[in-house]
Length: 227
Length: 409
Image (cartoon, rainbow over all chains, first blue to last red; front, side):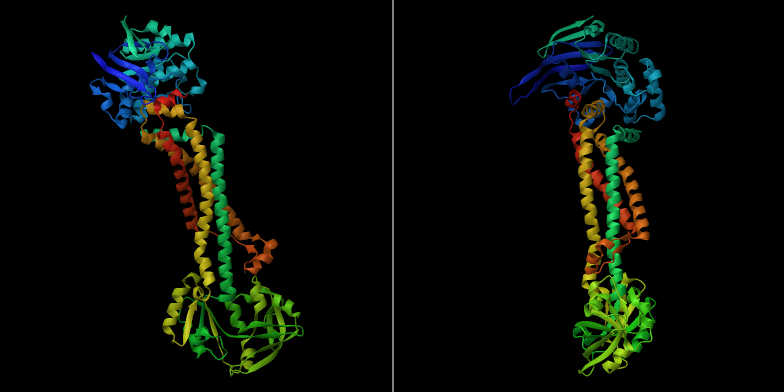
């Protein structure tokens, strides 16, 4: 069953000057438990699609339905709330809060959700264990390697039990070993826990692990391949 | 739980850049300390000036014959002054009373002569009521064995080229309108902080002056001191209500509009000083917090992306500023209070400027003082100002587009 239904999404930047068509009528359905890589050359619209899918950017036209919710019928406040509870984000530059420890970075999401202390302590340690960093729970981000920081970022993305995780070039700043490690973790979470991952990537190593590869060219779906 | 998370994160953000936060905290400390000390200094100077003026010259309340108020002629004496003085004892708030004979006349030495106000006092009562005697620098205060003693200011003595025991002549109009004169000897010389008073006023015994005036019982002025000079207006009305309309009772605020103005404008001046300091501080805070927001663009964008709403983002920045102020303000308050307490006890000696200060009647020894309410007001002002300064950077954080903010990393 499709948890995400993208219908005829377009995105035009600078529409009143020299228009740039970043997305040209994207139709896409994502099923629960998919491990989808969105690939394509630079400027093909991967990040734009992910931003729109995450409710961070508005489309010029079209709509997105997530589990029956029309994403763009929500106002800004509802969208923010929706992201907090339903979407996990992993960014290329990890973007951990530098003044909080690994554990606190994960707990912060649960705290702003209003979860009680007992719940978020236990949950953060479970997640750190899942990404193999329970021994680094009290380390500051500056004390962790890039790969470790990105694993904490994955754990943070999963903290709120989201419907799906959006990862924008998650391995772009990682070396081979860290990339492999991170992909192993995400693949395990996908296969064992059924977590839906959607990546935008250039990285062939990520593409190789994906179960579905959507290729964008010039803002259009060039190919959509299931493995 | 979410509020706690924001508070904790804000607190940790404060210490993200300890040097920068330290500078802001130091600015708050210095602004609060210097503001409080400066305000305490000016307040102490002004309060002391008002008190000195009242204690030495104006007194709290004066009673005159109604006609004397319009024209200070020798014949306009207070009728039944002794009865009035006795009736004043009935008021709990009256602490001291003394009658005076006051005449404008001419003082002449062998070298020179000047116009002066001659105050005929009862030395035993006067010393309990005013403080002129405490400014004695040479000789005695009208209590020696000399016949017709006079107590004059050092500046006048200098102008007349006279010294202790020198003979001077006082010439004035008696009660019948005739010119009369009497020889007096300088028994004491005073030097108050008020140069104009030192040059223009002399004190003699009322008995000696009244004899020359031709009225042994003459009283032109009754000086009344009360327990709280700030209530003088009310007290004057109470006294007036039991006296006849032949006399007029006036508080120092009626007698000296200048003192009234100084007293009433003191608050405004002090808050003006604080506001100027706080405005300067606000620019520092705005600059620092703006830097803090701009260097965390990507992080703030990420927080918005993962679901931190605008209100919480705004609160986080506001809290960071509030924490900076909450650390700096108490330290500044404590320092300011300590300085005011220490110098309030020891005094600040401005002897170097004493000549200039004397011209305006100020004492060169300043004792800073500040009421508790000022400390509270200043703290509140600081808090409001710094929180106000944080609004612009916090709004800047609100306007961040998460997508663009994250891309800037």
